[in-house]
Length: 481
Image: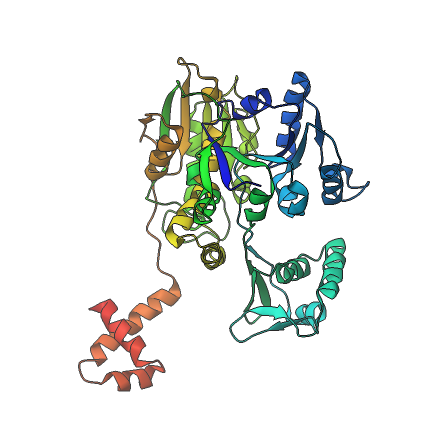
């Protein structure tokens, strides 16, 4: 058992994984948890070349038995030495009693957020799936109906998982996870299920012989804040690599002349109206075109959201669109010196209150926690993507060019790269001022009428005339004051 978290925080390309492999004690029982199966495959090749005794457990062999069952059976076998390679998700699902005697190493920082929301469910579907099983309350929360045992919900969870009914799977798993807050958002069309929850690593950490986490800027993550508030000691891991700095000359190229970019801004037309779809009329479309053409035919790696992929990237033979999560993608390090990173850090609006509730549950300061979530979802993916280039090779002669959303993002990336970068402002696009909607224009006209009426009528009389409250009248007068 341990009360310490050992951290190996170093730049991408510093050799964290290689250092771990070199320092493996063949007599130790080690679980290596990785974010994705693909990243696990890359590590397997490195271990194989070093003659390390390893086993891989993932869903590709689930025809034998579930991944969880196969891992837990292996954990209780009496065998000295060896590395089990599993995913972060599998680690979070294990019975932690089986971790006694094992050392756990997380390659990359685990994502603790387990907040979710369903698609909209018609009332008839909601009734069919959940009648007699759950109870929804006036405050929006949902609980297990009195008298319904967990065994019934477990059976329903299995059925919904096999049938691929995502909303039911979310509801039942959320209710069975006692610390999760399950709520129901209602509108005219139906219901949306929301889950505020986090993956609790406390039992994992305290059950194993030692717990290590290896990653970039670990101290900026939500996991690090969780460890701090839970009172664990934080010490440098034996797997931490030696000193490493990037040596390339890096030029950061902000694309949009605004403090923050968002999908809403990228879908604006030149006249400030919102486009009905992402196409060539949008400022974001024009921005992507300008960002690609900035590189003048040189090879580039492009990172963007799936909704941006309507843009004809295939028309540019020099552009390679990578997966959003580019960790472990090292095949471009000798061929590519340029990237285009067109993403934004604004969470989906429905997630913001869920994150707030999750952070309160964790005991993490709300503002500190939100900053950590933004770093993990926005800055870190960009830094990882930039590190797919030759920057990670540590060659002084290399010139790296990176197009980023804004100047603010460029400053934050510079901090993460721990390198003084050049800034090129030559292609920045102004974002048009958003044109007012018809509803806003009507509201503005009404507010002007209220201002004139206020010279001769009371707030109560004005409120009665428009069918609004006196508070709304007061707010209207403040707007036009």
